[in-house]
Image 1 (cartoon, one colour):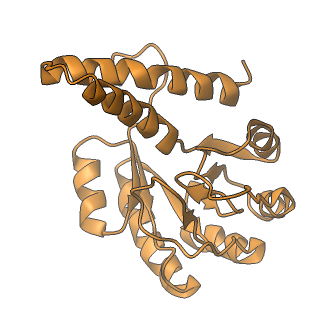
Image 2 (cartoon, rainbow, N blue to C red):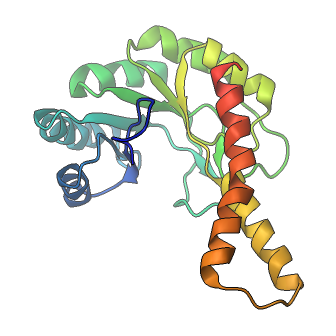
Length: 211
């Protein structure tokens, strides 16, 4: 489907923790992978990420990695993160040592939906942007105020991950369908769930492209 698309499309493996998973993804045709070694101390994260970069680059595949840790919010299926924000100098050292292509910056967003007011450190993002010379990624786009997303893009964010709002649109549709207590074929329900997700995707595409 990506090959047939009229626009450039990357097939990305997000938050992979095992080298074996990443190798399988590369063999299956993924053009981008994320190795998440954020649970390790900086020195270990560098060592593991550097190995992944060497493997992926031999296959022409780009690598995203993470310094800091994005906390888990509501309705998320991600593993629990501790919310440690990215240290700019550690990020600089990490990028230089690993040769990674993209860096996920932890600046206060969460995986899932916010429980309370979003506290996003845009000043920290500006420091990270100054410290590294590769594209920055923002995880936790769902529920993040639109003005914050726009400012983050101005400060160097080149990719925004959005999942939970899309998921919630599909699940909300499913719940309403169940309330009607009308039997339907699974293929019909799945097709209609996809249609329910599209307005959310359209919103983010327009927002993040400035249209």
